[in-house]
Length: 132
Image (cartoon, rainbow, N blue to C red; front, side):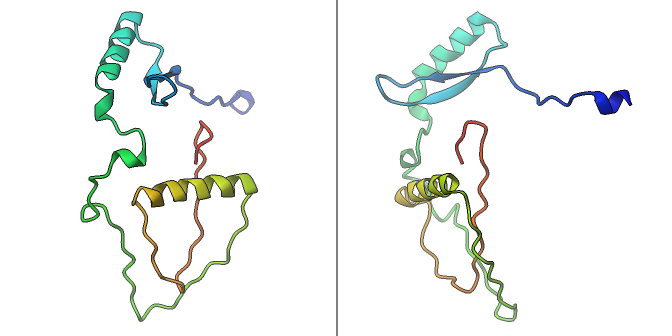
């Protein structure tokens, strides 16, 4: 009975979101607040000194070769075709998905593929910070 009455609590790390950008530039990192203040300050200085080596957006990765990370859909002509019905999504989720797909398409990470017989719904995974 005691086990059933216990409340299950989510584990939450003590983190602080810091912006390393200059001016209105957004370059956010998450820093653990449980470390000592001296170590934390040294870490922030290190991150600011080397912020140019991090990628902050898809456009920061123009040299990513499609030969290394390209996904293809190998089709077997003997398999029967499967086409899922289009699922409806909440309008706010649909907007977030469109925004993310456009961002990746503009950066050259996505390309249009013509597989009209094989259609599957997008599976969105919401993050804790509200992003998809």
